Length: 499
Image 1 (cartoon, helix red, strand yellow):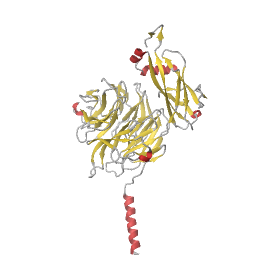
Image 2: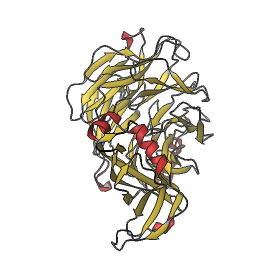
Image 3: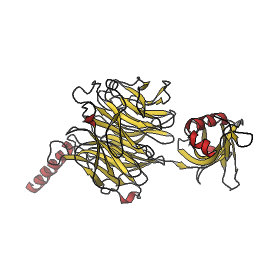
């Protein structure tokens, strides 16, 4: 009897300890497959990726106010192994302080030091490891103290790093923040915005002409020329974000954003400054970040602390539609990146006393690789024809008749015409294809707005890549590309009309 009583007491104590503990729940995948890449836990924030690795910032490691706590690091983990190899140990590239924003080009990882334990900085370290290099102290301009978002040209053509900086005391409304740039090799900072123009900038993105940035309070998105000048307001329709950060992603025509606050929204605003704002997802728990591919906007919806396991990863079509939950059961979904080939990476941000493990995860979502043939093979930019034609083939197991023609876009911009379309076998390879047509004038206008005209005039011909994206009727995305030559219209023998 005493032995039985002892067993019952021990069992009861074990049960009580389980009930009183913070449960560690693995993320539950609703669409695609999801697995943890990293073995270590910590307060993981932003991330970026290339074809082999995910690079990410660890704000700190170990719960605050515990012996296991230590400052953060910049790390990388290989992502393109088969799932059975994971989780694996990540590789530290830089240790110490409190890194937040991260961006990569072909050779380097660039990151910001927030400055909670010192001064805000812009840093870089070789992707293959080495000694971290200080590029700039952000306090060199107006004594500002804290850095956040960072962006570079991933192709490496632009020699600058762009970043957002806010001031210290009174930083919610202090107008001393700025958007700046510094050479990738380091040097003096160039402030792109003047004193009093910016209140707490956070998210940053760049294209060939502009730096796009968000302001946390008041909630707005602006752009400024890369060589400096007066900011151009894109929208002031965002909610004042007093508890988080508004992060950005861009494509050819839109700036995508996430209002990081309880009840926040995910949306897009036109890059051309016409004021068009589209809210794609509303009344969210707390969207932390955005990433895009050819057809979707992906975002982590954080989950309000201290309630565990409420975080999710979601996506919504870039042109609007149903918001789809991809993963549930995440303690604190935070950073996100997408490859454009069906791979999405996200961080589980933990810490602040939590016993839940953080980590970096890979989510593979359905993305069909299509074969695309675009005609004509050579496009005269002065031609007056009506159509550009594309023939789309899908891999075995998919039916081109299931393509939702209304979802088909060329370079994420020009929509396919709903009529005429036809299923046939244009190239005679025995695989059915779907013929769709695009307005030739719209495509020529798009090319002229985005091509390097100086190079085109010098060379007379250029090869460009055109990408077709779309969805099947069940929402599965597909993408395929083809190259064509473009030429300027000629006049007589060898003369070229100015465009």
